[in-house]
Length: 232
Image 1: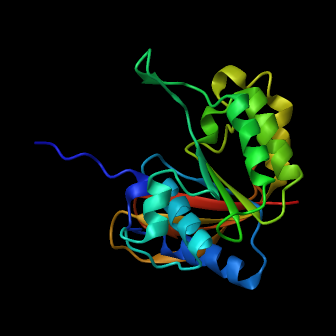
Image 2: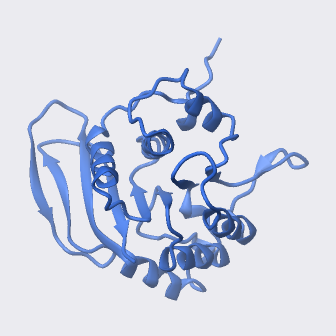
């Protein structure tokens, strides 16, 4: 019998992204936590798992947590009043998930983030993934990033950060995509080597999509995850 795969919000284990999680937690403890983060990299590498780990820590004040913790269980059950996840909705009539995240869902984010936290000191929203935003939804989220509510954090997952909008919306959303890129800070890009070869820190040259960032490089193949702050 085939076992069901572990989904990100039910996964208590984070493998390979401890550096990124420590970076987020250090920003939180220093009081300099950015209001928005873009977490990007190949599909299945653990981006959403990283986001859920940090969300649970932020809402509980404890970074280390097992799956028996009440906060873990409430986020798993979508019952925590200070947490929301936005993803394509399931249509029971069609028995399939929508291809896009709608503008109505995006507007719900703004309403939720402006509320005063009820159980913790923060409101946390994960969008998985922004690759599925339509043009209007992308503009709605961009407005949140430009006018961020206090004590709220928006974590955006992307499998293809070079596009930031779906192909069908790229022409109409060209200006929105440019604004997204201008809001991004220098990132922290870390590659996960598939072999046990040595790694070294190198500067990532400036490119059209992102400002200069840093990456881990090595001799051989591998996969990467990148975190970038959004500027106010």
